Amino acid sequence: MRRKIAAGNWKMNGDNNLLDDLTTLTVGQNISDPEVIVCPPHTLLNKAVEKTVNSFIKIGGQDCHVEKDGAYTGDISASMIAETGAKYVIVGHSERRDGHNEDNQRVRAKVQAAWSAGLIAILCIGESAAERSSKDTLTIIGTQLHASLPDDATAVNTIVAYEPIWAIGTGKTPTLNQIKETHDMLRDELINRFGTEGMKIRLLYGGSVKATNATEIFQVENVDGALVGGASLKATDFQPIIDALAET
Ligand code: PGA
Image (spheres, rainbow, N blue to C red):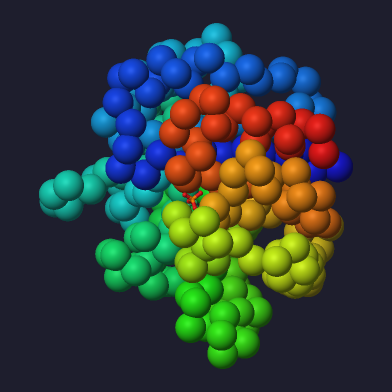
């Protein structure tokens, strides 16, 4: 059985008050409870780790550089994220792929950098609205998965998040059938490539997940949880999503 995950991506949002709010989340501690991960901006990582040290909330970064160190003004390496005590890092989010011109090859190098630092990579993939309209979704995300995930992926070092770009922050979501179609395809790809390990890699859905749609999305086969943006910015919004996952 794959343990469910509720992961919050704060993006460029959040402050000390939001960290205090985070500690009010009620998170189960059994293997049958969802794993809860919060990815605040890098400036808050140290404090986030400190504040959650006695809870079951885990902390992650939102991106990392491919190199360990060097002359890369404004960047942060995976080992720096790991040094804060964070255990995860999001890589290949569409806001990085599009806004920072990150192609599959670079994302793949970031996954590798995350692993080298001992972090678990949360690899994001997803199609644009135009790709969805031209019926290229499965080809696009299949290629992204293949090209951005290195051969050494395991269920321990990798989580995959399917996030249609047009659903991110828009309030739009794919139909449940569309979510099923993509997640089934991704599961098949993972099994074809990694065998039984591919069966164990968690597949999250992301894009406008809210308390009101969480339950139905979580009931879709091969959806092992969610990567949540806007609705992870308040404990009162994030908690019902965690609870919906716990009840699925
Ligand atoms: P959203 O963002 O939940 O605000 O749509 C999801 C994400 O970008 O990870």
